[in-house]
Length: 295
Image 1 (tube, rainbow, N blue to C red):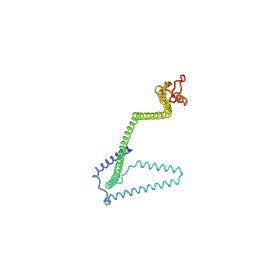
Image 2: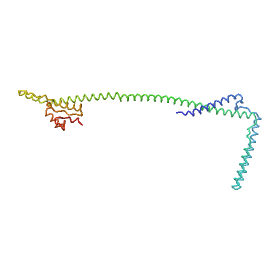
Image 3: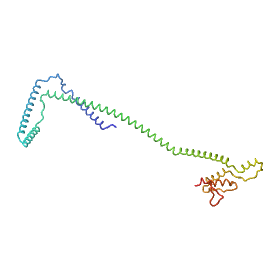
Image 4: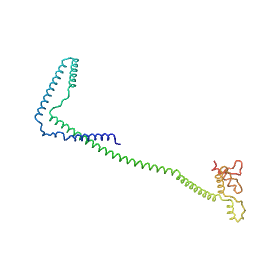
């Protein structure tokens, strides 16, 4: 993200620069005309500048002579005396600079106006450069701000889309945990019932083919031999015996035993007992139950 503190500092600097430029533009008419390469300066001003330069040069020569003399004394004296002499010289020079008041370069009005105007023009150019830099920086910050705002809007739209999708998925999960789960459970129950019915049909066909009732077998043999049929009891098939025992377990699991009566053909009962399909009651041998479904 953009540092808004830097943007505020740049704006403040820009405002100050504009105010200073406006202040300078107010006093611009009262300034002297621009100094050009062809500008004419009075001879008295030139002579005054030359005389001042000669005086300053003489002062520099005197100072140079003093420094040379001090260096000569330092070379001839001991180390301690050299240090003391240098300290005194520096102290004296410090006192002179503290008592000295700053002087103008020249007291000529034309020279001062020309130098001041040149300095103001230099400062004005520097301020214009600062102003252009601040404007460029401000434009760059504005572009960065716009790009960051656009990125922020895109992120907010993305966040909204993700939030809506999460809410939609949550609703789907809730629906799946209730209604969809019940529907799938009902479908599985129907599939189990269909499979159970198919198994029972296949079991009935298998039992009817391989374990027929005894009077059916006797009728077939007696028809071949032309022997008159004898009345037999109403026996139930092996499939009916198994269905009776299974219904006992499902309907009355606490009492899964069925009583053996005349409708049970003894060979079928013995076969079921021998193969461990059914078990007798420990106290009543005439009652049997299904072994496979009893825990």
